[in-house]
Length: 219
Image 1 (spheres, rainbow, N blue to C red):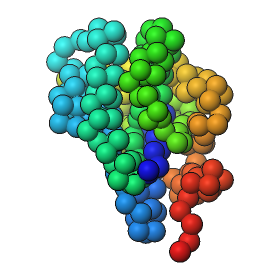
Image 2 (cartoon, rainbow, N blue to C red):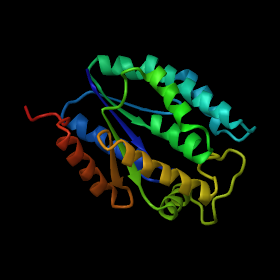
Image 3 (cartoon, helix red, strand yellow):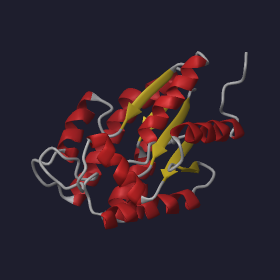
Image 4 (spheres, rainbow, N blue to C red):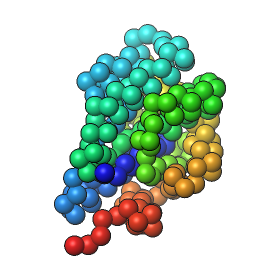
């Protein structure tokens, strides 16, 4: 079996950068990887992603939950489980914690219900390790502005990701949700200071993987 690692955090925390850096480090060690994301890691998932993250129409919060879970079920069956069975390291940008944070802490849905859905769908395919990259909302928002080439405040508009452009209060609820999850599941979730330089964050991630005895040994 391969190794399953997920990356979590508010938009702009730097998780996508860290996925790329870890993928590069593993490939240097001749380790096969499967880099994927949610939502949108499958063809069906791309359609779901367009529904959820497009701004053509509003999606009810319960509908959001079930669409995210549907995307995850297809993703597990089509991509994640086959990759793990073939011995690959699966690096996933967002997974279970995103749904708990966004739909649970952010939108106020019952977190116990969300967890029950995941226990049924995931079975024994839980991440070996989850990294939560934490940084102040102000830092994350500034990074998003830079990434999008904006100089004004982020505001919702046609084509915008509604989660990226949500209020600062919403983003703070998400951040606190992630911190709470890291406290609840310390054996699986590692909290990383995402406000540091990306290279330093990467080194911190490698150290934790080594500490967990997951890092491939020298041959």
